[in-house]
Length: 275
Ligand code: G1P
Image 1 (cartoon, rainbow, N blue to C red):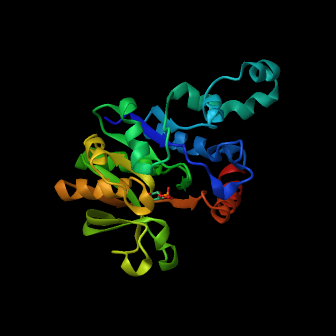
Image 2 (cartoon, helix red, strand yellow):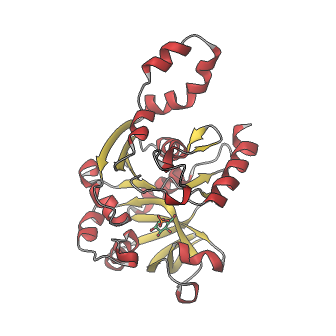
Image 3 (cartoon, rainbow, N blue to C red):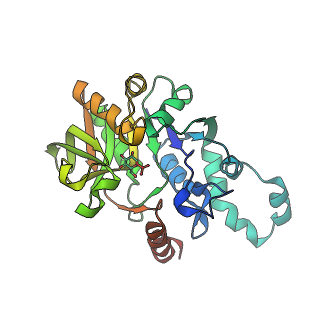
């Protein structure tokens, strides 16, 4: 079964400068928890306990976050303040954390390829932590929903969502045949097309389950949109040679890679999750 999950976290977070000048964007807090912890909690809840970060320069705070801070532990031991460490202690008790570096920013496909040694020859999850996904309390998280589908279909799966026309150019977009309610067998995928050239309004959201043959495919994928090696292009090759599914997940997604989305997420989490 799937045990591993990759988190590409090498990006610069330029949209949040100056906040992200010396701090990873993944550590920006949504209320009281860093963005990346939400994603890691979602992965662990889905049984993906071996977390691999594809990281870069200036991202050490992420490694420190998933480690013990002895000084702090010592200071607050036995006090009521310990309760604030509960969630991260739970994550650390249930997960393991490995790190590898992407030395050049050559796109999402390249970031995934950098994680190859952490993954090996098994299927794995991918979380783009900019996409914060919130599901109804007590119901399955997005990755849990996708793992259940994987058990049935044994192929790569991408999370998708309908987006308004003026948003289409920000996403990878799929087209395919609906094989059952909310599930599509993908026949076409385009990275960030202009709305008028998009094959549909079904956008890829930052949750993937990938079979390990994707690594060889990425290696043979030429740079695409913006001169970067695109995971979307590699997945299209995989879809043409075999099968890739698009899954309309149940839940809400917030684009925490943009200031507007980040503020919306913060308000939503404060009102509906934190309180
Ligand atoms: C990446 C993917 C894109 C996907 C998006 C989801 O783009 O390349 O296909 O739709 O994540 O957030 P990014 O937003 O990292 O540029």
